[in-house]
Length: 197
Image 1 (cartoon, one colour):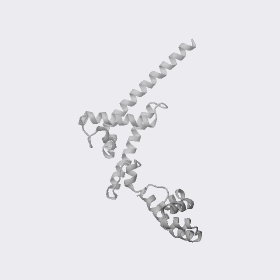
Image 2 (cartoon, one colour):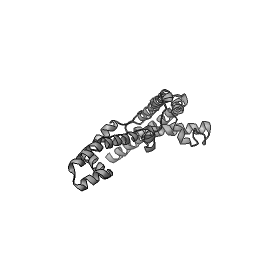
Image 3 (cartoon, rainbow, N blue to C red):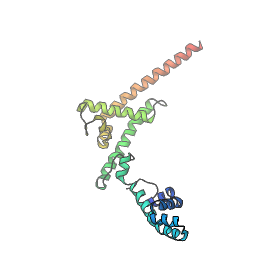
Image 4 (cartoon, one colour):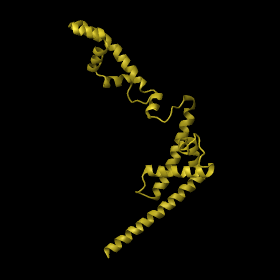
């Protein structure tokens, strides 16, 4: 699969207009440069037109190489390359994980309306997951050797997020956040009353 919006030929049209293509031809084609130095404009124009297709084809191939999954992985545009044979399973677990974590994140945000952002709520869900993982499996257990890497395992996170343990942990965090929010509101009202009197 490709990740680009434009086809390679479209990228070449935008990034390498005819003037730049002609400049590249003059730079790299020694025969064209010799014709230009000799002042034979007609022969130079014919050679440049003939070479233009080859340069455009080479530029399109180069643009296509920038969009292969391996290159996208190397630049950090994607987390991993999914083989076609496992795509349905992996994308299914990714969807389940996004839905389950989104549900837990929403529960936390409802507990503290207006003050807890999406990213902060997801960090709290991640923290709860890693704490429970450390309790159950021990602090050094994981898939790849580092506890934080387990958060990237969609199947494991989704199974945890759908579990009753996760719901209880997030409900406890939500209660704590509601209580803290209520205390802050009470303290703010008390300060306002003191200031008014």
